[in-house]
Picture 1 (tube, rainbow, N blue to C red):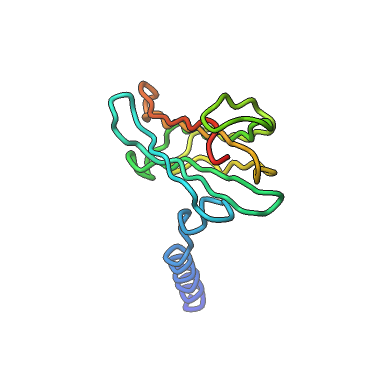
Picture 2: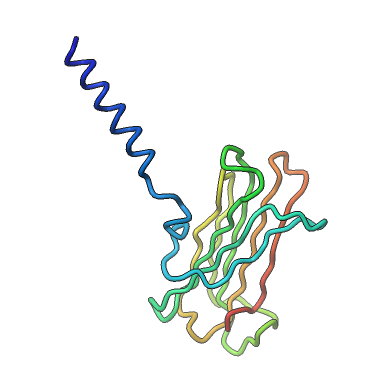
Length: 152
């Protein structure tokens, strides 16, 4: 009996210790490598900020851009529909211009804190498009951001 209690106590300490010392998503770049190069506010039509779209860049693979949409309004205990998209624009796209897709990645679903990561490679000399949306838990309203042909 003492051995069973001892084993359960040890397992509890390991579990609590693992939770207490587990790295946070933000410390890991939400799964993105490289450096944070931009942050866009995800806002409702009335201007209320529900989150951020974080954009990262790495020189790996001819330039890699990676993004995640992060809820900063509803809290991690609340599941809500979230979407993040990233596109590498075709060669010749000018900053702020129309981005025709050369390569894309997206993530959508019901998440409690963030959607992503999504990434495209070969972006060292290309514009990218990133967008994200966070819906309220009842899916009756949304906040979004759309950055077209940026970081060229």
